[in-house]
Image 1 (spheres, rainbow, N blue to C red):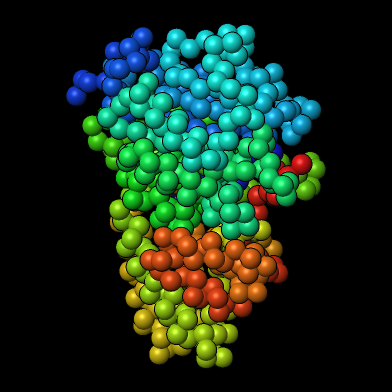
Image 2 (image 1 turned 60 degrees about the vertical axis):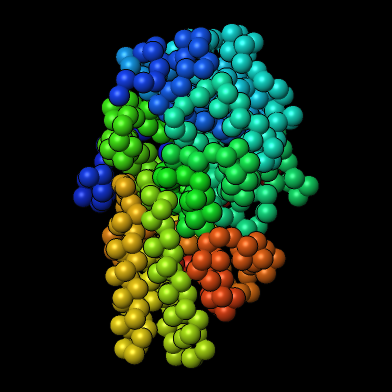
Length: 482
């Protein structure tokens, strides 16, 4: 992965005017000191459960974010507590020469503690007081580890509402590795094939089940977690999901803006979410402008980005339209003319990252509707109308940064002018699909939509050739390997 990226999102100060669309349109809790003030049984309004790792090159995100989180907690009548379980990177090998690597954390160490205004942030004090174990002894990706952490939080940092904040490189529904389908790829834990283990969405689901935990929200601090497959899997266990569908840059505002927002609106989470949007909207977008191009030293380029908050209980309505779209595609794929039209739509649909399989689901529906003949066009257009309606109903807010206006003279971005959510598009002959398609069929998303039935027929992959208008972040898979 590209240095300073999260492979989901992860995420500095002016909006790109004219090329950006946005849609941001009680006294219980802590004692006002931000922390529990020595009373572990004092229940907060919200506890954020921070859970992640340095991932090889993002310890600096943790280093820069922690002091800002402390400031956000240190306000009168604070309603938020902040629990941490963090594995620092194994070593400094993935950091460049110009990156500061003298962190408060030591390498290859797991830290677990409640972050408060009283937390010792000196290097010596932090390392001595908050070390939990060696990181090699803490497999973040295992269900048992997540269960133990959630139970520890509930006992030591209790709250009326819990927000899970998985942090570090994200991968959406990455089918290439059964145990690395999601987020938090940890350099302290490497598989036999050389890839680093990540926290799969199934492990999160199982842990929430075992601890009988229903979350107010999941705050996906990792790239490309805004995929329908992942969000659907977690939907029954949380009310809201914050996420990006693009590869995203690390920006520590994500850690503390939600704290500030909740403290402004502790009794109305959707109002707090809208404040969260307003607090980091411009910083988020500007972070993707004038990005150094690692493939062209000395040159810079722009990248598209998104960040949003979605209602989990409304995802089923989106999936209902995906099911209709899957039926439309499979019913028409046997006709050579219609098959060619569908293939052309697949090849022209916006892809969130040029070397990944995730396409914009609404843009795909639009492209299909534009290309099918008149006999099917009415059905396809109705799917577009109903899908757009369902997406708007599910969205609390959305930040859309259409920062790439064209590549080689062609517009880059979805036809609607804004991003929706991601959906996997594999060709039936793709090696990844052939090897791991069974994993996809086991997802709650596929059981609800039957999307794999189309993928089993599809002959065009979104990664093939240079046809799709794809975002190019110059990201690569190197961060998962030595």
